[in-house]
Image 1 (cartoon, one colour):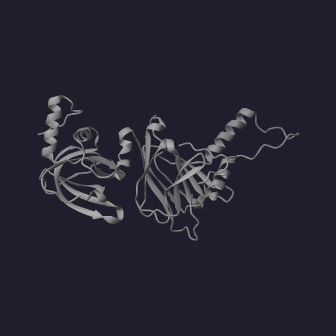
Image 2: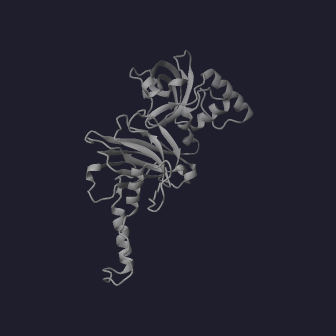
Length: 327
């Protein structure tokens, strides 16, 4: 998101003084014009002077080499430089890694294809060892804390609409920054995909027939198989479900790999919320879901016999949103 610092705006009630002061300094990119009176003639004609100023202004921002990810260091900042760095990323997914954080970053996110901001959702996932800065959602000078430097849950995903603002990353005071690195992954999603991670905080419930049939069309993976084991990870508020897949209908990012014994089966795992209380179950299931931040997250997972019933009923009524080979 393109975020502009407002030098003359009064801070809102939730704006911390240090962050506001840093943003004001970031907005003062050029010295004020001198008062009226005679002065030396300009060294360059106005059009060339304007072009030079634009080029110099762009040089103060840091761009990633691949427009997807950025890696920088607070130690490269000179004493006279601005305290707020502008970072511009133009990808649907990537990462930010800020070593020795000092001052603040404004992270401007845009997709690599045209899409209205109202249809875009941004999700960020902090690195498990991220430390040294707070991450805020910022809009017109108002800050809302997303990830706290001290006391936050490691790896917890936070999502927001791009219309709600952009990312403002502010270093926290540290006596020793040598061991500090603030980092997170991000994803930009549109439409229904943008709701997937929001739904992780919703109460666990079985999917309706309509939701299952739609999941077959829109999921990153659709597989038929059995639950081998379930491991609960309380510190991450997650459960890991290990699957043995007998039929691979669709997958993204090679979530499932061929079994080593060459049986024609695939092995892999998916995650879901700990509060869902998943337990190893007997019988064959149809598993669907999406891949976020490299992890497969479980969506709808009916028993395969139930799916056969609902699919046949929808097929007879001609309301199947898409087809799947049932053999």
